[in-house]
Image 1 (cartoon, rainbow, N blue to C red):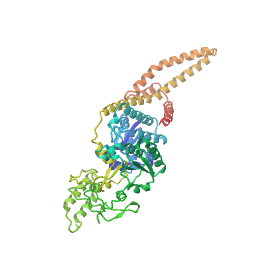
Image 2: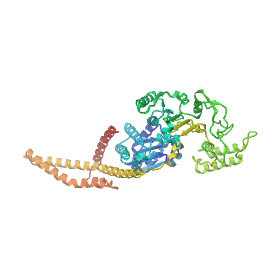
Image 3: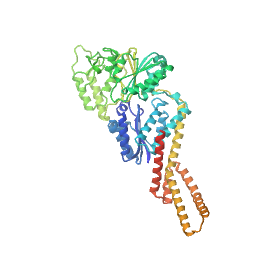
Image 4: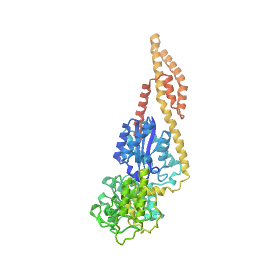
Length: 570
């Protein structure tokens, strides 16, 4: 059996794909169960964070394993296999071990060196152990990954190279101002009470906000987080309180900072709700089109500030400011649409009546040609590119932000359209990924990479050595049976031996057998630990004609013991 990992992350896929592929807790459980039920896999574990989804498995066939794991990821994420495949990466055996150890050290994180990933790896192992999908290989692998991550943080300065995603997000909100100066005295609303939200609340308290409100669907978890914050209030002077999710709209009227990280599959905060909560019925972002007629916002509150779809538009697209080429918003509206739909929209644009007195910033024919070009691209590659860069346009100054939103959820909690509201600054996973691409790397990263390389080599050697252990045990068991049989036969031939004589003979025979087996078994373990040493176990079984079932029984017994120890230490 061999280790295989199939996954996607912020390094391989755009945030829009990661967002759609995100797995909620129930989906992760079903994915694990279906993976171990599949023919190529014997063990499975899922590592799912805000910027990665990875499926680890112990498989007996590489190509069949890749096909099966890819199909299962597509089925449980809801993203079609054809669409998902270009963004998937595959690591096998030592490369898979190297990948997980690098992840555990924070080398593969969006913010290099962040330590929260260790808790997420621990949670993944605990879930696999609880569902009995983690056997000896994945127990050993994930526990060793946790040790490697802790070693990297304790022996190097990787902590100086990175920070938590929360801290990085707050720095982006502060936009060049020291976070402590920016946060001082602000009122914060934290939506969610999971690990990331708890970290966000603790960070906000530490940087100097005056009040933290926790909103969560489960009141007990919100109350518990509030208790923890208030217990530490002597150090931070922050006031914390819990509210039900239904009170979020009311709290928006008071909040200066909102951090959201829930497991919801839909939006928690729509642009309309934010506009209504702030009383911005007609407040628009810089460069926005005139407001559309008032429409109802969630909870029965009316809000304005977001454009309605154009009348009779075949794709139900909202109007966007006309620029040379498509705007970012316009591209998002048509991204992923089929060529036939785009051509239909192009014909509508070409023939749509223009209001009297309106000034066409872009010639209709030019706009239709642009859409036709996109349609041609979609026909070739199967979809409109997710992240085409808009042509540069003159930047219009925006109002100074009075509401700061940090969305750390995947899929997103906060509607990306809130950036169109004047006075709002939004930072989400996508903008954090772009910002982190230019973040400087610390010199300690090279030292961590050396630690990872050493630990991968040591893990591989231990794994290969462990592979031959059942064969060695079976050999020694066979030798002990031979000794016992010969002593029994001696008793029959020499019945006059007293106990002392029989004991001396038995001890002598055992010593002879042990000395004969010692050198070969020690040497075969050393050879098996080297790359390519797996064949020595087969050679030993063949030379001594060992019963395969005896070897398998020893292996099962060791796996059972390892599983029990692993569940106790996770």
